[in-house]
Amino acid sequence: MKRTLLFLFVVLSMSTVSAQTIFPVKFKAPAEHNTGTVHLSVLSRTDHQMTTNFLFEKGSRNSWHYHPNATQILMVLNGEGYYQEEGKEKQLIRKGDVIVTAPNVRHWNGATPDSDIECLTVSDLVAGEQHVVQLRKVTDEEFSLPPCSE
Figure 1 (cartoon, rainbow, N blue to C red):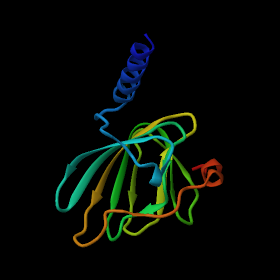
Figure 2: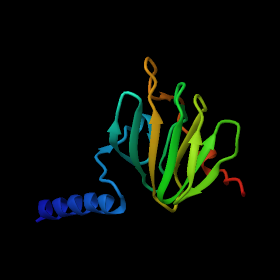
Figure 3: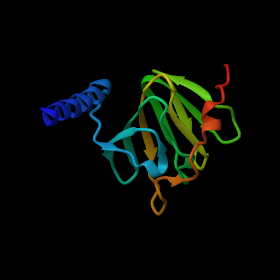
């Protein structure tokens, strides 16, 4: 009986995540570069571009990072989250927002404490460069600072 309930719980948990997303989630992102639970799926990849779907569960975020010599476009599909570039204030982002991150700009993004956020990224891929350079984790203090009011 306990095994049946555990199995049912796992199946329902997985279907809840999938039901929340436009595109199916395939992988859990590594904790080494993320805080909290982040799911991702690479939807397409060519020699020059990659499109990825991310689901950040409430309070989760990626680490500070940058894309060497590559532009990244982040489109918010659902929910609310944060985006911050180094040296600038944290922004609240919502469904329909589009963020264009210039090459080599250090930044992070993730969900608010009260909302999941689903994002689609389109990233340039540059021959001979890493797709992403991971830096340090976003601290709880940085995460808890209020976003700028625009």
